[in-house]
Image (cartoon, rainbow, N blue to C red; front, side, top):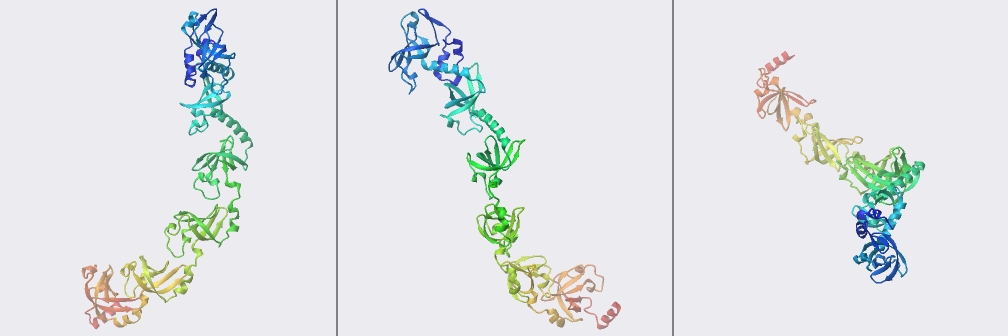
Length: 562
């Protein structure tokens, strides 16, 4: 017979079957006498089967009153009781007439008797920190209900695994091993942890693994987690980091392109930090680096096909094979086109023909060129545009010193301001040209090495300084002109078709002049005398004050000057 106080302590809270909770809660401390024997409620007894029908099993427990047990307490598949069999039962309650020495029924439970016996067996053999094996029955609030030798114990969700599963319900129906974390002596509850057992086992395996682990070893492991920077691989007790840069000799965008969760892979140990217990792993190191044969496979000047894999502001990276990429610098993309950004010519995925320009095996760098696959147009510029040739082009750009004229696709020539007019003093090319204007020029020179072509516009006609100007303008002539510009040292006077002469401030008046604008304005028409014509310097000197001078005064002034 089981002590009634022990029966009360077998309440297992929410984890215990409802029927058993009710039975234990109803435990009574009173005893009833039936004849000469004493019968205690909630006592565990042995009885003999007297009769079996569809609803009940009649059992003799050795008293005047028989007891009955519902047939459904025998689980499906369990052998049907036979008359004469001995069964262990829990006495639940008496009917009133059973207390009055009349032959009334008593209520029995085979299932609760078995559970109490199971509980006592477990309590006698299990203690905290023991390893137990159980069967996951179902998912309950906060975790799982696990059957350990007929006793239901609680496995919290946080203790199911090292990394909490997406759905702990996936463990239902599985046999698992756990570590007993706590046995509550008051409520008689047991809490177990599968995670603690795994961690305990991993700690032991980690210790053993760290003793034999060496750099260079090839190991098999399971991918446990994937991040943007790499994957964590369980080597059997300790995780190692497989960095994205050590997954492949080729370019990859994300580790998931190479590995997946729970995949078994083969890795090489690259580095071991035993103090911090950190291990660096590699996959690509299991095969030889493609750079080992790069110099032999891609010698300088080799022409090969490649795929554009990345475009930057300074150039494009081209893959020659997995793990071997070269840079086509923006300056090596075209002989003639002015490329502001590589994306103007290529985009990722394009197949391009390139030439190997240089190899730095130590830095694993290859310099490639695209323009070298085509003939350099500057190599035939000297033949196509010899000095003296007339060319037509479009004004592409204007600068302070001249205009760039595009005479062929990507071929520019420079028209300097000094070569725009024989007679005009051009201070900016915009005075004569505008962007987009088509002009005809003469080739003056070609510097093929520096890739420069000098053009001339004034050279399209004869130099008037060597022919017409000395004939039309002689010292002593009085001519009319228009003030075009006023400076602090004098006034420029336009004579014809851009031809200008200088009227020095000292030649404006017989009186001292401090500011030329006090006497003339731009646009004023003035009468001046030609003082000299310098064909070498291409200058004409003028005087306003001498217009009315006689020959005698001119001679006298000349004598004073000397």
